[in-house]
Image 1 (cartoon, one colour):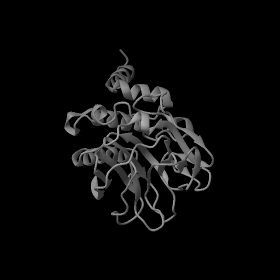
Image 2: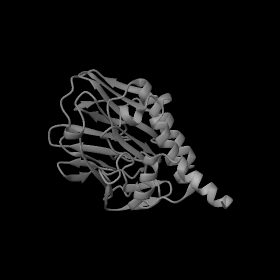
Image 3: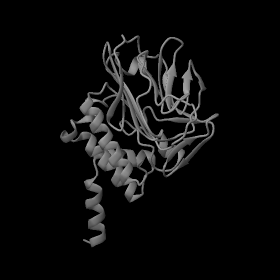
Image 4: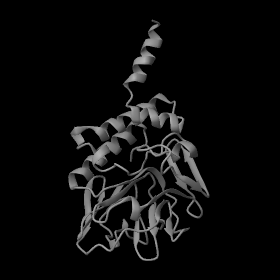
Length: 265
């Protein structure tokens, strides 16, 4: 067998089937991007990190925002074709991520929190590649009763966050770049994390899950986008509530992914 063909076949066989499905759906052909996605998948499935693929992401969307185009950035890694993102308004897609214009641009994966998650076992995360002090929500939804949202910066608060109707503001220092997670694991346990470390908590009783999908780079208020962010989205996901260890492990995995793509902050 030709040596080059043998190498290609063996490389192809080395990819995890979930990674291969994503390559096909997103049209990913770049070897560096394929390697980064494959490592992301295998890390998420690894027992070393507690098999997050199954334990926090079953039924929940993961958007790696890789490929440099609107169509590639739309695809849900966990289940391509389901909860893919629909992009609206002014968004710049590039190798580093998807950047809103701060006035009209947002993305919607159609994942409704009240039907897709469980109260007191819910969460979401995003990776910001932009440092600024412009108010805007990086992920958010409001159904007229309950807020679920997070902004790396909003009116001097870093971050501003609500989960399951509980407000958890502040705690972060430095720039608005990095990996932010919100988690609700019990009736009075809500936390936020930045780069895998807990930054704030609130012991108030949870209210409920929002009956709307969370927009990326904007707040979805009963179907209308507002409070737009112009920070660059480099990874976004929904998940179950996180233990402190799971939050740290998820950051390790996502940061490893970003570093492989040369866009880590």
